[in-house]
Structure formats: C-alpha cells, structure tokens
Image (cartoon, rainbow, N blue to C red; front, side, top):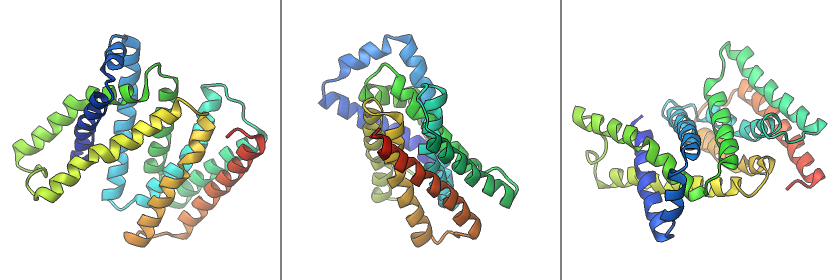
Length: 258
C-alpha cells in the first residue's frame, strides 16, 4: 500500500514538471472544466490504482509469474473488450485466441481449486483502463496528470499515516532508498504517458499486440532472478495463452490491422 501511494504522489510531481515544461496547463484547465471528463478520469484512476496495488502485491508475495500471466492475457482481453464495447469485428481465429486464453485460466482453476485473482484482476483492469482512455476526450498528458491528482489526497493521506505511526519507509532507510521511491514517479508516469498517447492513435487490437514485451520480462525476472517455481500447471497455462497470442498475432498481420 505504501509503495502504491508513493507511485501516485511522485507520478503527480513528475507530470507537473512535464506539463509545465510543455506549457500544457490550458489543456488541463479545459479538461477540469468538463464534469464528464473528470468522472471518466476518476474511473480510470481507480482502475490503474487497483492495477498498481495488485502488481506490487504480486511482487512482494513472490507471485510475479501470476502477474506475468495476467499481462500476457491483457492483449486478448483488449480484443474481447474491443468487440463488446467498441463493436470491433473479430475473425474466427481471434475468437479461437480468446477461447484458448480462457482455457489457460481454467487450467489454473482446475489445478489449484481457486480463481487466479491476481492474473484476472491485472488483465481486466489494465485492458479496461486502455479502453476507457482510448475513448476519453482528453489528451494523454492532461489525463494522466488529472488521474494522479484525483487520488493524490488518498495517497498522501496513506503516507502521512505511515509516518505518523513511525513505520514510513521514506527517509528512514537512507538517501538511496528514498531516491528509489521518488524515482517511482518517472518509472510510472513516463510509460503510462506513452501508453495513453498510443491508445489515442492506434487500434485497441494493435495496442494489445505491443504489450507482449513487459510480461516476457516479468516472467524472466520471476524465474531466473527471484527463483519462483514454474510448475507443469504454469507451463500448461502459458502454453494455452502463448498459442492464443500466436494465433492472434498471425491474424493481425494477415488482415494487416497493424
């Protein structure tokens, strides 16, 4: 919770610098004046806040493999949301990809007897975030600044509470540790800024296709660096999802959607 709060606080600091350097405050003022925009961005802020918290939780409790599965599923979920919400047409092969990804989740349910909530929450919150930001009538940078500002009071309150209790990490573990927490603003804000900008310019399906890189890195880090177990169940789950992604990718290139 504390790390998530730091991400919001320092992301707002980073975006304030970006907006000032780019002289984009008039655009922010226009967005703030529109109640509909504020309502939309409040929803996206909550979605990304949940996504950040679940991902950080997965890292802390050694469930990075589960997080990786969630982000691998995200492109397929984006395709499904594009069909349901935006009425984007899906081919037969894309439907097969959706079915295979669903089979991957079902494998986890049958094997462990529990719903893989980390995987599902990460996949659906980020895909939904991308969908709403794609349709929101606000620029990428203005939207991200307002999102972080909307949840800033909550985030700052959480950090103040930790400091009041004497358990806050900022400033108590040395300058290097404090600098890492502050750098969370850049490490969070810059990718999301680019993501939101891309979401306004390209098809939702294409946007999903480009997101294979991050979960691949997460998986390698989980297995090779943090020595998380990669059992037959995970292998079977990844098999279903990777087959779905291969079919989906081939279909994207075949129909020249990219």
